[in-house]
Length: 153
Image 1 (tube, rainbow, N blue to C red):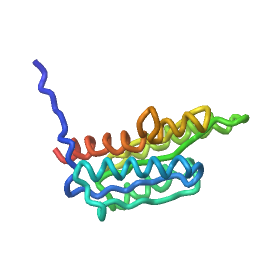
Image 2: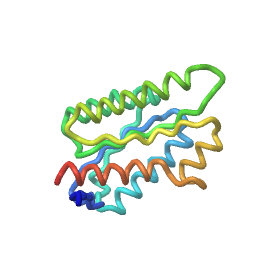
Image 3: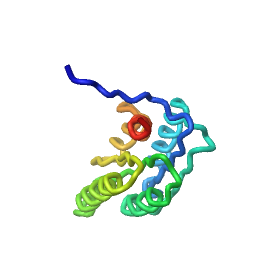
Image 4: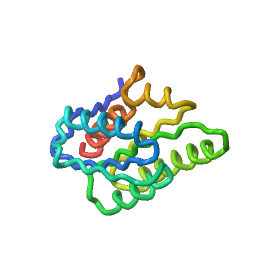
């Protein structure tokens, strides 16, 4: 029988950085609200949450990497909203941002979670930012709380 290692969903005493894209801020502000609500519900003090706004999704992994190396936080949530347009810009950004955030998480000593919405329409984005499909910001923050618990164990 395997020995299952389950993390406690308790962020008490943790410091969290949220890096969020200002582009599509009608959506990303809702993601931040969901993330902060989740962190608070799981024991992270408001004073222990720093929210860093960057221009767009492309900048998310750049600042997340710096924060990871600086040791300012026990975990980092990256949030953004990429909505498909009429050019290949969406595909290029969606892939490069996801890959870069993953590399930051793998190369650092703190967990980094991915809360970037990638969708076809603004309606789909709103549905995933507190609408009928939940809040991706909340989910990314909950995943971070779990990962921080594993890192502390």
